Image (cartoon, rainbow, N blue to C red):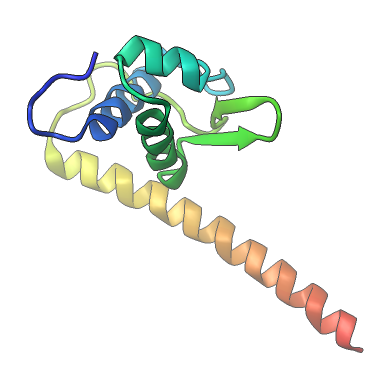
Length: 121
């Protein structure tokens, strides 16, 4: 349930789901509960749940499959137990994840650029 703390409900839901993914409670490849189920669980509207899931998509923790649902990314590995709550450790982990995402994007752009160059010939 979303608490009345002044923090937006969709952010609270995203935080909870993110934590469940990072601890391994929601394993890589596993489906997220349906939007309707999450709305029921957190006692919020479907729009609030969609915004929370959108944050996790932007962060690269989940991916949607048309007609199938939303799944925890295969490479969204849980944090080892005993991981330090040190903010610097969290920042380093976030930077590593962003670096991986940028590398994937650059590879995709390079591939698409190669296709368009060969299409012009």
